[in-house]
Image 1 (tube, rainbow, N blue to C red):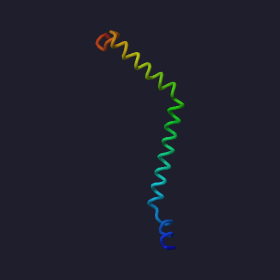
Image 2: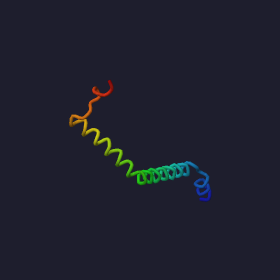
Image 3: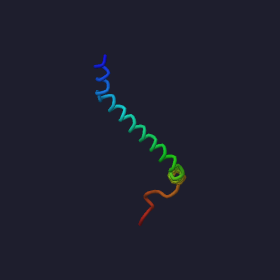
Image 4: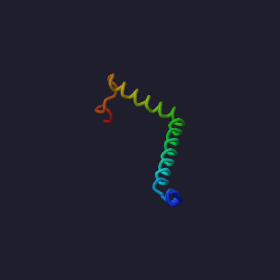
Length: 68
């Protein structure tokens, strides 16, 4: 019985998987935090792109008429 307990303590495969899980969790929390902090900038960027697409669909500036 004592050999099995020692084997569990010495075995590192489960320990490695736990470390990967912790790293993945930290990355996920950091990503969510970054998105929360940059929310206004992200919304503004998508609104700008949306407006550009709508203007182009409504006969706005076409790529052939720029430059000259």
